[in-house]
Amino acid sequence: MKDQPDLQPVKDYLLGLQDSICSRLARADGGQGFMEDSWEREQGGGGRSRVLEDGPVFEKAGVNFSHVHGDQLPGSATAARPELAGRSFEALGVSLVIHPRNPYVPTSHANVRFFIAEKPGEAPVWWFGGGYDLTPYYGFEEDAVHWHRTAKAVCEPFGDDVYTKYKQWCDEYFFLKHRDEPRGIGGLFFDDLNQWGFDKSFAFLQAVGNSYLDAYLPIVEQRREIAYGERERNFQLYRRGRYVEFNLVYDRGTLFGLQSGGRTESILMSLPPLVTWRYSWQPEPGTPEAELYDKFLVPRDWIQG
Image 1 (tube, helix red, strand yellow):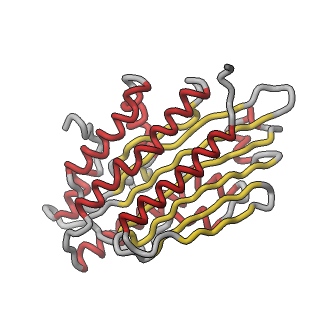
Image 2 (cartoon, one colour):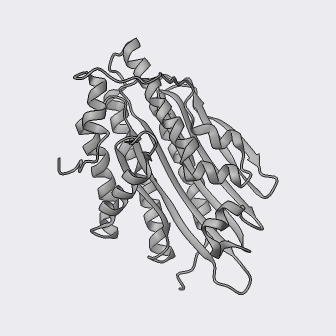
Image 3 (cartoon, helix red, strand yellow):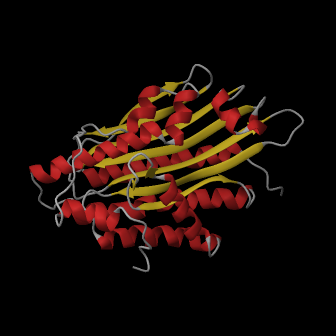
């Protein structure tokens, strides 16, 4: 059996992953669940967006599946990857962002995706990408350790250096250069994954996708009932501004979606429902808010301490 790229099993897996993640999140929230919005892209393809809003636990949670295709990529993509010029393409993935109501529960993001570009008479160009990352407002070391231990366990069957490589890539990717600070405590990030061949690369994608809620939901359950007040809520809304800034300025998925004519409503699903910005605000030294910057928004080996 040849180890060749095969889009259909990837699509089947991603659709099932969206179903399973939505089901488990809806149970954890205990509210009305997700609304679904199916859509078609005029240039080719479409998707189904699922959004939970105003839940008891999740103020907003979006879990999107998309599968778009076209005869050519936008110029911005081929400028960065000249080998893709003149090729038709298909891009599919599941992307999700969860904005909890309680400031002691961190925001989280995950994405798993597949891309293939083809041209008659030439070998296809393809790769997998994805990962997940955690953005706390109030940090707990045991949560960070659990998150990263789960990520490391995912990577171990695929090589001794995989976790270290993809953790570092995550730290570097989810970094707000204009603020000179990380978005959160990281996790895993990988892209352009094809060097292992299709079967092993696809297996890694599935391992990442399947482990996301194992990493996140125990943290949700541990923190969801902590009492909070106006101070914690205001800090959460302020820090959500960093999330918005990253997604609109740097995020590759957001930029590719907008440049390729994707559905704007689904692409911007990742943004929080409420957010604030304050001019030149700094936390008071020694406060729990300052601790986020001092202990958590710094590069750390969370597993070794």
